[in-house]
Length: 299
Image (cartoon, rainbow, N blue to C red; front, side, top):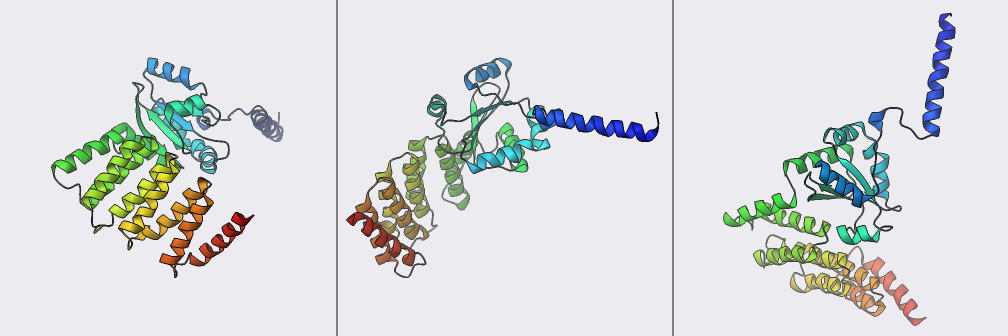
């Protein structure tokens, strides 16, 4: 058989393999494939019996960052190789279609990536999109116990003993802890850190108290306690009118009031914003919003 004929047969064979793989959705190389489990209850049990760490991807069909994770991060060879090297069991769950999972894991932001250790205990959560390098770095940190809630709380206790919790690093630490609690929907514990920050920076000299109050409004919003969220946001202007968060607090409060269907309350908030910040870059847009809501209220 001559060389040209051999070459032609080789090319035809390779093309056939590619077409078959594409048709049946088989990976051409095993390293480019991730196997996801969907039965989370049995999968978690099996992982615990095998002492296998677990990576759970909580997603929704409409979430752009979730789709980006699938399209980019979960197709990255380094990420795939890392999962295999660490022997992760991988689980995908759509909480909007599995309310039992939503209630059990208290996942309300997407994507939420939950990591369990080989003993079956949750050790950390990652929120939002992570590119391949960010994800592998974050998972390595989790494996080493760096940046987890347990680690942050330990560092905070040390800061309290050394009386350095009211420094820039101390405040940053507390905000990180708050974010970890928010990710777990542990809102009461998150609020305790709001109170501590406000107490440590009563006069807002370090601009931390106003930031904490803004975070307080966000916590109540995530908790679906919209009235409390509105009150928290409006309190910023009352207590710290010169803060950066005072004006933005009005905007958030108006949004939360609208979420409650409180048109009168929304109008009142927007009018107060224009009165207190008449030269704001958002004042013109806010006036248009007021006219639109007033027109709607008359209908």
